[in-house]
Structures are given as C-alpha cells and as structure tokens.
Image (cartoon, rainbow, N blue to C red; front, side, top):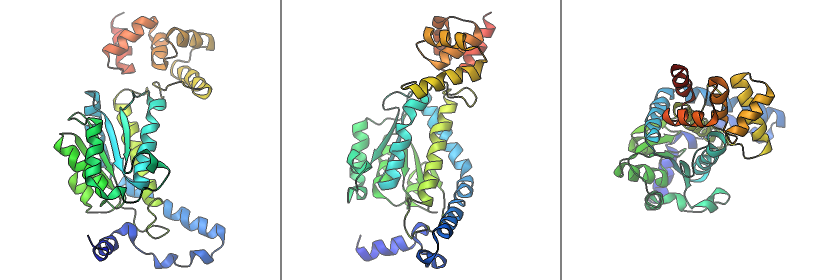
Length: 309
C-alpha cells in the first residue's frame, strides 16, 4: 500500500476524523479543557452499550471453550495490544487463573509493552507465528483488538485463529471494519473522532478497556470464579489480598473472625473452599471434593452438600 493509499484509508476512519470545533482547545483555560475532555469521555459508555448483544454472544462463546479447558488470547498492537496484556495480567490474582489461561499478545513482543516497536503492527505473518508458538487449538478463543479495525497484526491473528478452529472476536472502534468482518464475532464500538485527532489511546482506548473488562470478568463469572459479586477465587499473594480474602469470607458467610481464620488455615488460604467449609459445615477435604465435582462452581457445591445431608 502506498503512502497516498494509506492516507485515504485512514481519512475514512471516524477515529481519525478532525473536529473543527476543538481546533482552539490549546487556547482555553486548563479547567475548560478538562471539562471538554470529560464530556467527550462520557460518550463512551453509550457506544459500548450499543454493542452489548454482540459482547454477550462473544462471552458465551469464550466461556463455553474455556469450560472445556481452552484459553483466552488477546492480540493487538500499540495501545490495543497493551490493553490486552493488562487485562490478561490481572486475571491470575483476581480469578486464580492458571499460567497461559488468559494471555495478551502484542505486536513486537514484550518490549512493545513499554516501547514503540515500529512496523510490528504491519505483519499478519508475525501474528500467525505468535499464535503457533502458543499452540492454538479449537478450544481456544482469540480476540483481535484494534481501534482502527485495520491493523494487520490483529486481523492476521483472527484469520489464522480461524484456520485452527478457534473462536474469533474482532474488537474495533470503527463501523464496517476488516477486523470485525474477519472474526466470527465482530464488536464495533464506534466512539467517533478523538479529542486529539487520531489519538486512539483516548476514547477508543477507554472503550476497548471497558469491553475487555466485560469479556474477562463475565467469562470468569460464567466459569464459577465468583460467588455473587465476591471474588472467591482471588489469589492471596500479598498482605492486602490476604486481608481481602478474610473480608470476602466474612461477607459470604457472616462467620466470626476466629472461625474464618480456622477455615482459611484448614483450606490453605483458598477462599472458595473456606466459604464452603463454613456454609456447608464440612471439612476441608470434603469441600475440595465437592468443588471438584462441581467444576469449581461454589453454588453447585453448596447444593450438593445440602442434598447429601
């Protein structure tokens, strides 16, 4: 593609459009600029809301595959890639996911998380190679993330994933995007022109973060990683999270502190197991067996414990 062709393609994207009404923002008072930017950011949730049916359908597909042992993979470049890496990195402490269960791939590799790797986003072949190194299979789900919806790395990841039988989702911020067209599930959150022309780390980035929050969080809810709105699979890897673990058990059971401490000690700090010990009146070994039989779903384990009495 020539420079002229690329420019014409970018000019057609709403995320790249110029806003004449914002042309003099540099002459405004700081508070006025902040108010304008805040107003722009406030339009993002409505854009996400318009795509909720598509988001829900994608989540159901992801959850079904992960329930069979599959993995969730985000693939993107630049800001989009970093957002995928961020969401993936927060799943182990929040939901006690196993290594590789949720992964973020970024064009240019780990160095691109903090430094721009010029040209990395332009290669579909690199995306295919990155997924092959991951050992992608039909139980996996790949989410290509790109504000423009035209990034070759994200499109290449989705196209290659389809050849491997994986579920594919294309998340972009422009309507009629090649990325959405390439994927089984297209999610196009149209956020419009940016506050700074073409700076898609702003509204588009916010929209992508909101959608990724939904994809991972609701998938984990479907997989039984929560009990109501409590993170009962939280991994207590530091003092703050250990304190949170105690609070979660208290909120779920209403038990006194000494019983909570005893249950957590007996279960090796496993919050979900401790809740089951306290609510079902079983020992730690029985709690572990019940949860295994229920595929980790606490509500199902509680019902099984009640029915066995």
